[in-house]
Image 1 (tube, rainbow, N blue to C red):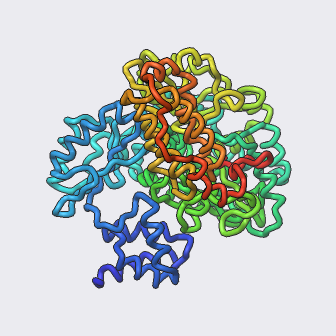
Image 2: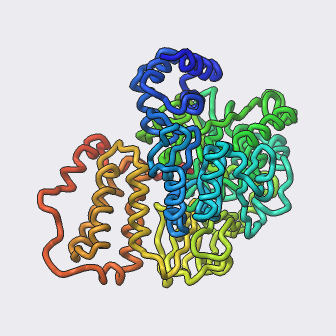
Image 3: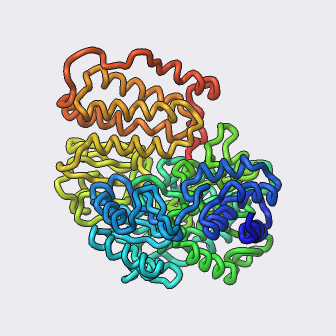
Length: 613
């Protein structure tokens, strides 16, 4: 083992105090400096951190941003979500491949370049897009891809790729990104000009913690991550937990295809996010906070760290916050490693603890025993922003917007076949048709609300409303015109879920593969009516028996597309036998999962809700 490797490992471990819960940060340092986490490196890390080699190897194999095999000095990650595919990412990939002399998944012989596909990177409003190391490149064309590849071959300088900086804080020297915010509609709560710095926190500190929680309850605020659980109730449960240590975690791991609203809030409303977290800490008696930032947003990390440092200097973090004696709270940022499943709150907590991001069996729920075994609340970026605004404007002001069961406004990430993709802050209760009109949708034929795990709609359903009573969404809103192949969209979503499954339970690990195989059979014209019955039966079984939210929702594109586009399916069905492969038993395949689960569902709870937000 080389001296450089030993030195890098020891320096990385020392930087994070050899703390087990910071293993992801340590691995990130090692990966960047050594271009991989080799077997020998794993052995050294295990010795330094007093753990087992298999634990380190499990992390490296789980998170996509780590690799046991050596990567190039420059890693080009091309976004391969459905929006980017339709926008032409394959043509872009072909140019990169030809210019660099490597295929997808390969590294050049001089170790300068690696070329990969990656799922949604939060840039669907400016597709096709890519991450080149930490530099975001948007609106790619085959021509610009050629220019970029030749430039990189000449000087290996990724910073030179940003020819024109984006708007707002994207132009800040610590962000230095060509990313555009694309804020198309500002609402009264989050993106308007009436957001007053620290007004919510100042008012909160004049109240008792129980009064703060009551205001959040009275506002009707529900989690903006998609599940819609009562924020006030979650805070109340955490405060009642008998433990001297409580944690506040912000879920900034928006990995749902077509979602990018948190990216804009992190860029333009960072102080509001941290203000909301501080209010939550005051309300529940929190001692420490963590922002779990997805690896794809690493380009925002230096900027966010500066905002935190400024808040500490201003007395808004640390000891005696805002002059409130005894109120001590601080926030650190935990960068993820590239895993969609970490958007689920228990998987996210596991990742923060330095473990594989695998969902945990519940109960107990995080509000009872979460991060490091202590009561923990996990809320979405948008949720914390709303909480801060509620403490300023008051619960009645907030509840007056939206619907009876969905108060306030919602940020929608609109992308796809429309003239004005971007961020729209709209009141809950808005019709799908109205969103399409605002976005200038071109011949809207298919709308996917809620990302890959959401609902697919046909034109006859555009009267439906965005709210928890009807169409619940974390924010993703994708529109497709009549030139798009509906089954290709469904096939992509299943491919995505297969790739992102943690692999723990059979329904998700195996069931989604079978779903995709049957969808492809239909696409090829070999299916019969029995295949549709098979898809419905298998989808419901997966949803009932999967251990976490990924499997509970992954069949939705199949079921909703069959419901909304029966003519498309009917046109591809032939006549013949049952269409089922002999010898396959879904019940037998799921027996392992039932044994582990011991009951049909382990994610939903009538009181807590049990999802990420």
